Length: 257
Image 1: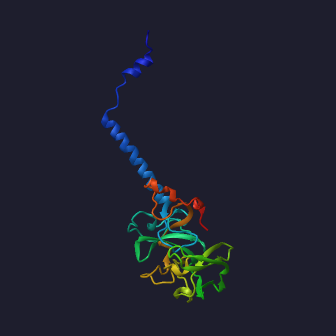
Image 2 (image 1 turned 135 degrees about the vertical axis):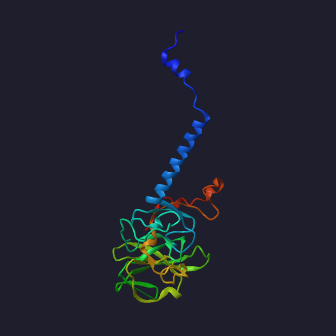
Image 3 (image 1 turned 135 degrees about the horizontal axis):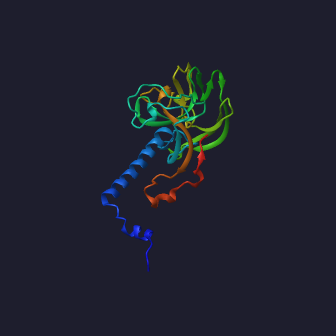
């Protein structure tokens, strides 16, 4: 049987060398890693919730996605927080009520998450646990009792808090506490006033920087927390398939309010 020229070409083409295959594999992996780093640096980055300070909206074990483009980019947006000039590129201020991920001012290697309560120029006051912004108290509505999951058995009251624009979220109130009263003060330019939703279990702008956050520089903001992708009970991990049964199915793709 006569073979075609195409068949002859296929049979005589030399196999790629081992070196060429290794180079091609390394190039593919490098491109993939570079793309992943670029996406995490410029667009979105995953984070996990390690503490109960944002309960009940966010709980320990939540895996969430943070949008880095929401407020523009600063050195805080980059891996390892390199010593670049301060400021932001394409800066946009968060809105009151946004949940933001940021580098703690007193230790930039620590990544924290809180809710924005006050913007630059806002007058913030707290009286008996009620937040007052520019003379107007944020509306609160009692939702009944609950439990602080970080401290099993500790009773709390669930309280819906509503921003002036109508955005509502649920907070925990554990009763009278040291952070329930704060004299009126103006948020300086370039700073934010942030609080955790678990009001009596959150070190935030009500506390000095060496204890909590203090006033948060806008340049320290990494991005806006957008959605809970998945959530696991304690002890579970992505790299431990035998623990995946601990997945909290009710928190899959849960938008962050």
